[in-house]
Image (cartoon, rainbow, N blue to C red; front, side, top):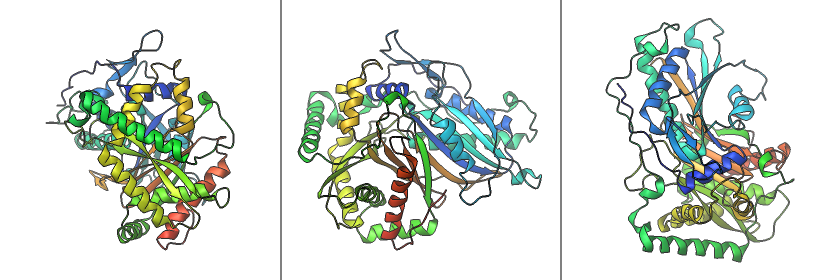
Length: 476
C-alpha cells in the first residue's frame, strides 16, 4: 500500500511566499489537461486521487499565516482532493471553443484554491456521454489545478499522469461503478514521496554561503545594468487594469505532428532551439503590432527549470515550483529574420543558464520580495515596470505522456499557466502525443480580446511561415 510520507511543517520559502502573495492579489493557478477515451467510473477516479494524496506530502497541506498575513507556513490537513464532475456537450460548429477550454476560462484560471483549508489541489472530470451507449466510446477531459506556490507545469502534468496510473489498478479490480472508492485497495508496492525542503535550501554549493551570495548579487547587478542601459520594449496594455481585478484568459493553439517535425528539422538546420524559434515568433508579433518599430531591444522571459541543478536533484514526479524566469533582451531591427532572433534568444538563454541567472532571479525575490499582501505594493509595481514575465514563453519541451494506459486511450496532454499580477501575454508549450501545444494566456481588458487574438495568430503564423507551412488558425 502507499504509506504516507513525513508531514510538511515548514515556512514557505521566499519564492513560494511570493507566488502565494500574488495569488491572493489575483489568482495564480497552473492547470494540466488530458483527454481520456473509455469507461472511467467516478469511484475509480476518487480512489486514485486518494492514493495520489497519500503519496505526496504537499498534497496534504494547507497554509497558515500570522494575523498580519506574515510568516506563512505549510500545515498538514486530512481533507480529500475535491473532484468535480461536469457533463460536457459537444458543439459541432467549426469555431466552437472546446469544453475543457471553457471550463479553464470560466473556473480553473479565475477561482482560487482555498489555501486556508487545503488541500492545494482540485480535480475536474468533464464527461461527454457515448453516442452509442457503449462505455468504450465515452470521452473525458481530466483537469488538475494547483496554485503556483506548490506547482509548475512539470508538476501538474506529472500528477495528472500519476492520477491515471493509480486509477488503472483500481479499475482492474472492480468495474462496479457503484462500489465505494474507500473499498478499492491501495496499489501494492507504491512508495510515498519524501517531504523535500524549500528549493533555496538545495541550491548548488557554488551559490551557497557568502561567496555564493556574492556571485548571485553580481549577476543581479549585471542584469539591472542591462535593463537600465537598453530600456527594452515591453507589451504595453491598452488599458490599465487594477491589480486586484486582473484575471487570466486562455487562447489554446497547437501544431500538428507534421508541423512539429518540420519545426524540429528547421531548428536543427538553423542551429537554434524550438524554444528560440517560438520566442522569436512572439517577439516578431509584438514588434509588428504597431507598425515597423525602430531598432532597439525587446524583452521576453523564459521560465527555466532547475530541478536537475539542485542538490540533491529533484525528480519530475515531485510536487513543487521549480522554475525561475530569466529575461532575454533581444536586439531587434526591422528586417531581421525569425531565425536570427531565435539564435540570439537561444544563445543568450544558454549562457544565462550556465551562469546561474535563474538562481539570481530567485535570490532577487528573497532580497526584495514582500512579506505579506499589505506590504506587496512596491514589489508588484516593480514587476509591472520591469518584471521578466511581461511577455513570456514557458516551454518544458517533450513530455512523455502515454498514448494508452489500461483500457484508456490518452491524448492532448498539456498545461496552462495563470498570470496574476506578473504580466500581460504568456504562452506555455509542451510536446506530447505528437503535437506541440502552444497555450497563450492574457489579461482581458488590458489586452482586449481582438488584440490578444491578433498577437496569438501573428505568433503562430510567424512560426509556421518560417518552416514553410501555410499560416492559418491552429485550433486545439
